Image 1 (spheres, rainbow, N blue to C red):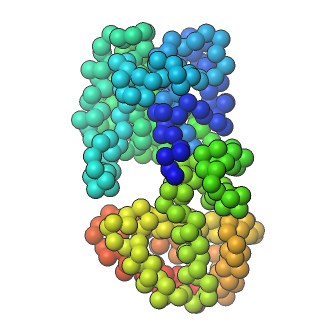
Image 2 (cartoon, rainbow, N blue to C red):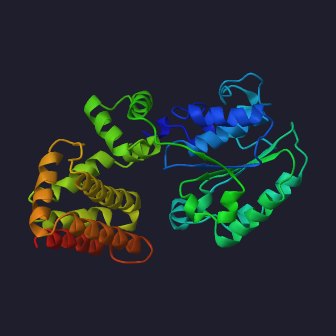
Image 3 (cartoon, one colour):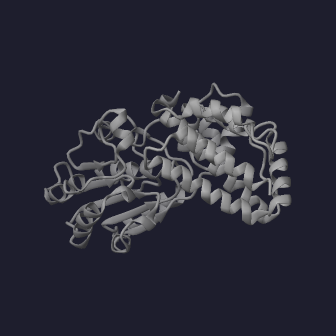
Length: 358
């Protein structure tokens, strides 16, 4: 099912970021195009798609009078860029190549990848005026890689442009951020996510699509991952563990640990734990505002009311925020070590039950 969603380099369309496109075009028309752009925003909203869109536009000659960065999918520049065969485009990505096990372990862009940029940019453009480098997930550069990139930014070659896609700009060196033009992309409107789901996953019924839109929080990439990994089912199962709150169904937690704990269930583990932490944070934000979150799946409202009621009797919002932080840290520790994931899951739900029982 996930194949219905095009990868960024092959995506000819970008919805919801018209203002960002206009800002880039304005700089280009004014003759003041920065040599480096830092494209930021939450995961899955189109940062890498935007970067590839800019690259194709420049490599196709930056058509005069264009009102968007779109280059048709049948354009020769588009086809060669997608195939990785354009001589004036270099893309640096985390987890480039390798099998699934290697991808799971890789958490950074090594310096060797970044060192490819300088000699590439020093070459004369083969097909036009521009040499373009895309660094996707730039926050994943290691320290040596970041320093190597900084040297390039300090002395940028003429007719070269670097496009850094970054979900966590605070992880970059301040000197890198200061040498880039910031372009912050916003989460997509729910209507846009709904439209894209209707186009790319037409098999979804309206109720499932509405639930995915709410879970996605403006990220079509998150929605696609939820579909691929059975996220809605895992979300319902997560709520089912809290059906009898403030008591937790630990037999069901054991079964869930057997299901998502093994290494082979890596994607399910990450999705389930991510959803649990997100749900706890969402409930805390709503409680701080004195409101109730919108129900995502049928029956969720009753679970939230049970949790909120238990919290009121056991210490309130502060206790829940502390629990959320402890749970988030626990899962992060499990991801960074060889802890038994089933035991980690049990520990998380033991903490939830204790915190809400006084």
